[in-house]
Every structure is written in C-alpha cells, then in structure tokens.
Length: 261
Image 1 (cartoon, rainbow, N blue to C red):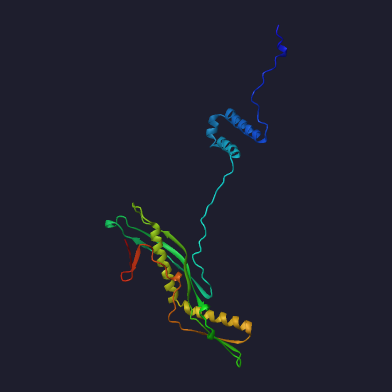
Image 2: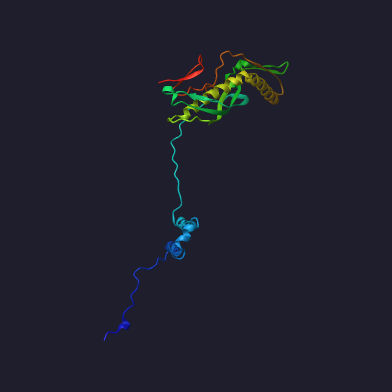
C-alpha cells in the first residue's frame, strides 16, 4: 500500500511579489480587474468616461513623471558699446492702421493685405564722451563753472510692440511676416520723424541743462553756466536708421515699395 499521507501538497510555482513596488503594481491590477468585472460595460460608457478616468488615474500613478529637455546654442557677443550718454527725454509713440498691401502675380490674384498697430519710443540727450578738456572752465572771482556740451541728438529709437490684424482672404500661400516687417519699418521711421518734428531735441536740451546744473551745483556749491555746441554733423544712431526689409526697395518719388529679384 502506498501511504498518501506523506505525499507533499503541490505548491504554486509563482509567488506574489513581496517588494513594495511589486505590491503597488498588483494592487493596481486587482483594482482594475474589479472595476471591469463588477461595473457593467454600459455603465462605463454612459458615465462620460468616469470609469476610464479612474483607470487613467491608476495608470498615471504607474507611469514615470513627465520630463522635458531644453538645449541652446552658445551666446555670441555681437557688439560692446561704451555708454557716455545723458538721456534727458523719452517720448512714447503709437501708430494705428498701418496698412500694408502687397500686389503680386498676374492680375494680383495672390495679392494680400493687413493692418497693423505699433507702439514704441524715441529718446534724446547729449553724448558726454564728445566733451573736450577746454569745454569746462572755472572763474574763481564769480565762483562759476562754464560748460560747453555737445548739442542734443537722438540716442535711440525702437518699436516695442506691433500687432497684425484684418488680414485679407487669399487662396495663395503668402508670407504674413513680410507685411509685418514693412509695417515695422514704416512705424520706426515715422516715430523718428514725428519726434524730431515735435521738438524732442529742444526738450532734450532743456532737460539736460537742468540735470547738469543741478548735479554740478549740488557737488560744488558754485554757479553753473551750460552752453550747447551747434554741431552740424550730428548723426543718427543705428537704432534710428532701420534697414529696409530684405528684398524690398523703397522709392521716395512714388512712395511705394518694390520687390527686388
């Protein structure tokens, strides 16, 4: 006779994970199975994704966190410019309805147009680096300093903001940024000319005189006289001389732009 009492009981060859991470995985799987078994499929579909939202939340817990990588090129120094300017006035300007219409192709079938609004600023002052040693004198009898400083000039021009709107409808592929560049050139040139015509240099001279007199009187206690040289060869800064958009040429006689091949 064979004694079956000594026969070992068969054991399951696969054991449940005992690690903490393994326990989380098994519990998540068990919950998912329970959701699928005990909640009717129709209920899952009719609850606007409620069951799937639960499933998604558990899957999100098991997924690794999202990551992002950002790469950049090396910084390049374009220009280093010493600053010796006394900016005495800054004027804020705005232009609306800068219309740009581009005519192209036979019969202008691919022509397009857009309006623009722009905001910017023009600043003016004096360049103190142009002062010479003989431009400053002192009279001990009257306790007076006399300074001859360069004539005021524009120091910077810029467009801070430009927005394009009211684009025309066209079936052709067009470059809307091309229209924006033309509008930007028009806005910057207009800001510069309007500021000059509005007397920004006169205001800059008045403000520079007040600033210099107040500063020198404060540190010396002497009288101060400020004179301005009348420089006929004053040049505009680079920022106030915008480059024409690449591929375009402006004709002052016709007040129009033409594309260059």
